[in-house]
Length: 386
Length: 196
Image (cartoon, rainbow over all chains, first blue to last red; front, side, top):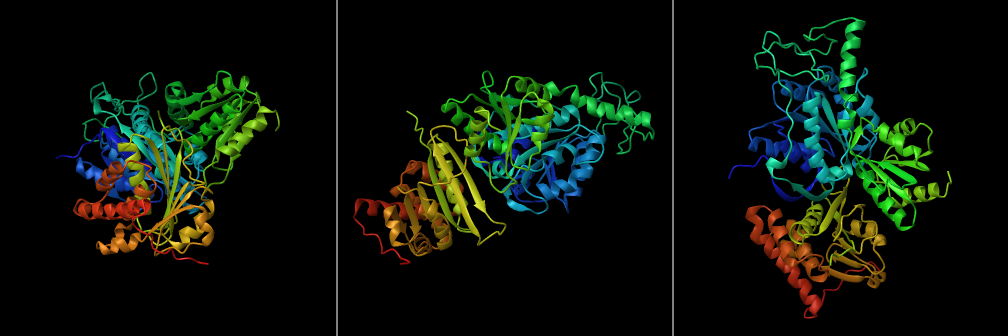
């Protein structure tokens, strides 16, 4: 029996394995990586599954090379990804920037563990939120998704590939140790029900094609190496031909497009799950594993008669500032629940813009947030205590 | 009617005993064959083998949000260290299950529902102590029926290497029959080893 690319059916697998299955279902056929807890099972699953279906798995010497390899594979016309955790994510930063500058579709899965440095290898944290946003040098926009279950590891990995192919950039899957290692039901739908997006191909002749000439929506059709089109790929600031252009004018033009192709499409990219927002007075904002604790706390608060609501960020970047601004205007308090010293809470404060007080429920990592902790913060806020 | 109550189970021991695999099989049986909701999370240190290890399983008729088992109603201990570390977390009305040869309990533990089985010894008699986790699952299925025994058996067979299926099935059956005999009173439990 030949191995299946899409394992349609009901499974009991962990988040890392679900990520692998999502990638394969999305069409990923190249993985380069270096194993690291708690992302090892992504690589392990890939090393087993990719050869079965004609893909390529390479264990690289480190994460710098891993990131470089998936960029190269993508230019070769193959959907590619890598997976890592904090220490490896740090090493990938420079080449993530290369992927952004060269507009290379690929997916980077970061199963977050507690840092800084080697930190707590086997224990949870959500401390890389700002690193995902700003970790590579220079100014850019990024897309990052944050799954809250093994099922979402599957679903969001597919979406990460679709977004990366459409908007042409490395998309970050910001998971966490608990979600990566948690085993739960994962439903893999029939192949024909899975929506797949592939990169836009040139619509002009080889003579007319310019590799960085964008369509009106800011996205440039991509010719792969070997397609017969003339391409030039560089991390230097470049013009439409892809050739280095070393002045402020070219910089302004290129970065404006890199930024605007995400910003101008943020409504299509941003995804949240909203609970009880219609009449909520205290609104919790959370993501990843912390969103599950938050959902429990919000349901418990409702049972106690407190009008609590939840915004679960499926996409953490771009941040849903329009939604937050609107909700803040009608809320008594907003609460960010996250496992770090307070990272996304800064975005929440920025977007709420003083319309309501903002609180933080957090720890520095090593354990997930207890729903009781979030509930007591909700209860205090409902009573108007700061 | 769906069972709304969450069942909280903590399986503990050291790395290499198949603790996480036991939790995985239990959750798999509940999810795939009993069509319930289940989550399995694990705790372990950076060591590959020998370190303290636990797997936390929640089984429920409804969606599970918070996946941590803080106060288990069933605690399975496969090592002394795991017992010492976790017995404090067991609910007062909870069930304590342990490997007779590997854990010395205390007289005060008799306030719990208690069951023990020489799971590792039984597994060794079948050829390899690697199957102690499967013996324990068979035992668990008899003394605390969390999922249907057939579901658990299916999940065991699906989770072990094909060449070892028959032997694992024997391990499961040995554990289950031992448990059933104790429940029925046809077999007296061996003397537990006590610390005090």
